[in-house]
Image 1 (tube, chains in turn green, purple):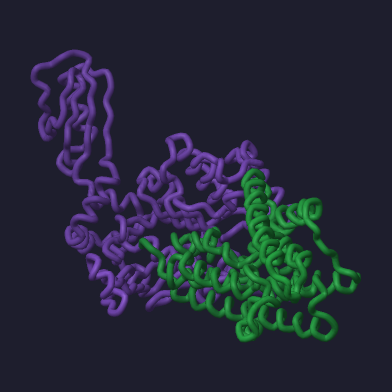
Image 2 (image 1 turned 180 degrees about the vertical axis):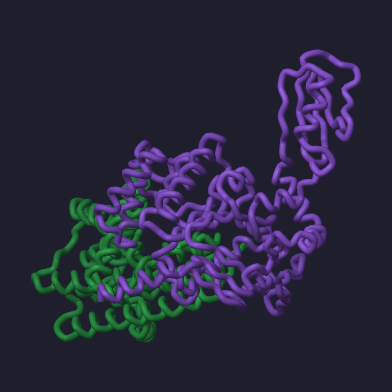
Length: 271
Length: 360
């Protein structure tokens, strides 16, 4: 058996190269940044209007709402609904994924590393600039305590892992459907709603919030940002984080299972 | 652990046959699609399928260091065989072993010892410079730094990859990409190289370069090469032995020269005469083409020897140039594809040749 750290070393190289290959598309990234701000402004205007019209006290004040949506845009590109455009689904569709089987790598880990590299790229090259520019123009709040910031960092890291694991699971569906845009689109809408990306779960009616609690997707957006805003505290933080961990493992397991099934039923076009 | 490694290594070196294929078959289920709008609805609920035999009871073996052309028309089952040898597809029945490994059961182990190039698709990372792709491969195959450096230096000398080492793969020309892919497939010193149409779409110079490279790698490193191609120049330049497959079945396995001998009944003699003659007929040879002073004759070698024929011409005429052409192997192979039975009959007549089931 080869030592674990050596294996890790290989896949870390994949993460780095994945990051690096996206560095080539600078203009596309700038255009994307503009899109992020467009959506951010829409959200902020809508909620500012809502809050101006309402006199009742809300679970989140306007500053917190603005901060929440700034963070949403920061992690927008890290969400698992960008999978359909990826090289991997393309490779499954045109059969060239078979070629990759001639390399001695573990596919789930390889794709996971590649997607994780993508997420890191968008976190630093898109998310961070979005956040820094937003600080200049909007009233963004910061965590009051360093421990909150640490808990947020942990929860955010897990959110990225979970998003990556979900992405690979969506990829694997391409073995059956040959095109993930359907699965991707459908799961995209579910994820967007139940992660709290459109409306923070704190503002939801109780019965719907209850459903969200039993689904994994809040762990992508609502959980880390609620920790950031100090809405989840104490033991709640640990419960939330362990739930994120559990769901991440579930999706890794599911992804691995589907991928193995997919490869074993592979029929390559041509002959 | 190292002891075991060496023991295993030497055990594999002892294997005489690098590749062994025994009664290999592969069937695919192909779904029948109903036509039209209504039909596509019906397809959603009930699907009919038929079984397609892609490879049918094929057996052969390839020795260490051999270069073998694996030929056949489109859809004959070439790629399917290659995919089973590389561990991509699982055989329906039969036995495959490559370097002592069973490819579909030991995919990752097998993958460490083989190099694969599919001419139509690149193995390199589309968005990364060639060098970065190579470095990733170094990691994947755990290639020691000295070996990596030596190989890169050698491939640069032979294929001039240094000229585009920093260029992203998507910006490479087809010829450059092919060279990069070939080098990438050999970075980890594989013992077998599978080449699926390595010269497809390339110009003459690029083809020559790639052939020369394959020859050199085979000679210096004893790499076993299995070459699938439609370019018969490739076969002629590289392969002593060819395996022909048609309609999923093996139909010839033997030396290229034997195939040629077996099928070539006629040769062509081209002559450039010094003067214009009105009667250019020669006994036992037919004029097939005439333009100005250039004339082509067709003759059967068993009827008249080439030397006699040239002697007869020299006696009667003054000539500028003369040459004898063997028929194109493309023509030969076409005959095989078109008429299997003719070949089988010839097989039974000539016992000097190894037959289809030579290894069973």
